[in-house]
Image (cartoon, rainbow, N blue to C red):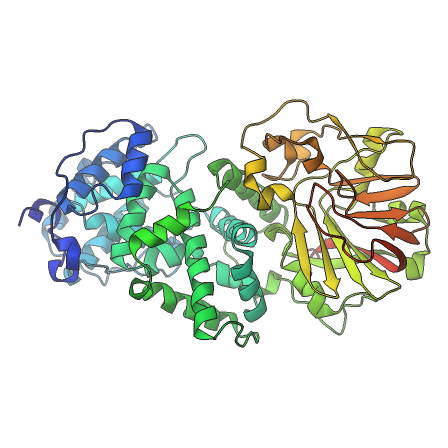
Length: 571
């Protein structure tokens, strides 16, 4: 067999169509963009030997630390052991967190070789503290390696990658845990219907999402995983996110079909949902081809490495501030939102409704509990007192019940004290993480228009974000609203307007306030306008959120509450 040189560890009877060699036998390409296109199209997908050679070329091109162990290091360390039959009884390092070596299409004895390679890697990379994806990556690369030493070198180069802004594998618990939070943020943004299903059925959403990497690196069938690996070695870590989001979309479609549309959405133990997703991913070959999976993954728009990096860094910072940097012995659900109906008290929303709202907020705040800051029933109808109680808190949640019984509100990313930066002018501030919503008569969320219509922006940083913009139909002399510049370190991550090239200044008017009103959303109207007595308000379509009126266009406030986010880990 032509592939014997690169297939000594492979059980060819398990390879199916991948055991047949066809298509090109050579790749004459050194341009990264061309490589990217060829990888996505599966140029080398039908020739095992060519795929192995391409992998070798791509991995050798990875920028690495000055001292990165290679094949010769492995041979020196293993010595005569390399010629002896390895044993799969060798325990894997603790940092793989119990993840087994997937066999995929390896010979039974080749799994023992993977164990030996991983343990040798552990000795050469003492700084790795948490890397549950390593067994799957080692197993995959072993299919395309001449010997154990070559596989060891390839794994080492992936781990030692030091290209700025690029990473291939999480190697600490902090990085891994923040990746789970980041996946939750991305799922919320890019597949809200599937995210809503998980929120409705799982008791602990983050526990379900903690398996996202394993869906791709471990549960996916080999035929699908090697197509992912083709692209991963060219484009990096973001591909894992793309594929996992695509899997979540297909899972939601599968559940809708199997339950005849709506079906039962009773909450279950999170472990059951995790097992259900795992079973679906393992059996995905019966309904979704590898190319169809990648097509779905690449259909996600405005999904950039920059966006992911900014989110990841922000989530890491949030975990560090809470002291969560190493794996906790206790269950994850101890630090998740678990509203206690006996202690949670709002005159506007129920505990279930608050939980629904919590599912919309950025994942880094999922470790927080709602904290009532202001309510008109206790503090009175005074805008001045509203500011006094809300300043110093970021983010906040605004809830309004009208005299007609409608309920609406807004998630506001920035401290209300920021309004003072505009001086006497009514100035817009905030970030694209803000959103508005209504709960009654029906539940609906309206995010920043750029999220739903990516064509309005590009990832080019712009100058002059302090442009003025007008907010219409306001009873104020300050019709020209400024958007003050905020220090970069204080901005919320990727959704800050300064990361986008907006073709309309009116699409980034999030929140504003002065002595006689508070406003949420601007441009051709306001999503919410509340007067100084917190008594009367208006709602209408605005360019920032592209929302319909959230209730009657002119309304009277029956009750207004503002909630903060209290660190659940603080004692």
